[in-house]
Image (tube, rainbow, N blue to C red; front, side, top):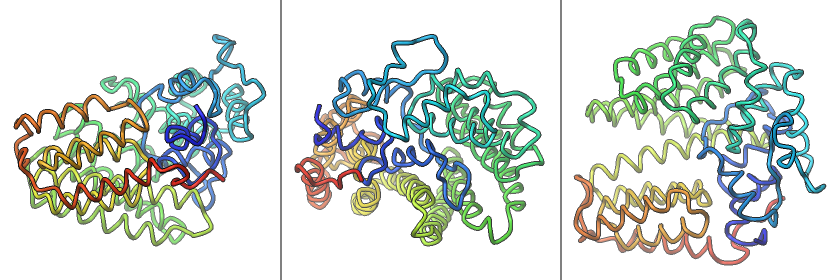
Length: 400
């Protein structure tokens, strides 16, 4: 499949780790994580994890025509280590460091694990975890590596209590308050979203608030604002589950305000920090989009959809959310177009998106939606224009 196709342009960075301006914002973190060129942040702060094995599936289905190859650690799968001489520097660096993981510094281990999380190579990450020990809790960089390991475990084994124990311990350690705050947020989100334990989630987010006060000083402003935005977003989820809509509104407003501050604070000459800020904004806009769909207000939903498309138009999950939540608002034509956009990039999540539209067309949209008679002229025009840009050859910015 040529690199110039929609699929090729969308996933080229995920497959090759080559820096570029096309594809999902979250995936564009990968080249910087692979090489450790993290600019002023000096440590990984990436957030989004796509479904486990997505990269491996793409390597298999594209037959290497886009680039990239399977990534393994150790000698369990020699065939998976074949590169055919096609590795670009970023992938070659990651492959070498995955193979030598036990001998890396804890700081580099954190970067490698963050990159593996980013590119859905959790199989390689799990094999690497054998090199992590309790000694890592004694150093700031070691805690950062353990945090990335815990994120990987939550992604692959969502109900495994081991990840909750690790995050809880990281949230209470005294050597790295930044990681402690991030771990407390992650623990709160997992407790709310996966465990349906609102009390545990509330406790974890209260701990996150307390640990954030330790992240101070001019050199930590960007990180402090990022963590504050994450806390607002996690607390919004808690408020939604509690059906506390005034609190939900305040939390979403706080998340957006801090996300906007973060975009302004990102140094223009620091690509990784800029991508971290953009990823955070994308997540905040996604939360607003979901909340707007619950209100059933098509105009509000359309406004957030436009902002999400402006921020991350080449992420399949942008199109998936437009389809699913647009259908819930009764915006059926636009939602159907969003399914088409999703289908052009991947089959991941496609069945759920198509089913949501079909349910809405049958008049069984979720409560809060406007049903099959919603007026979606503006939303239809918005999605149609975005779909035209996505499908038109050469419409996406080519990789550098």
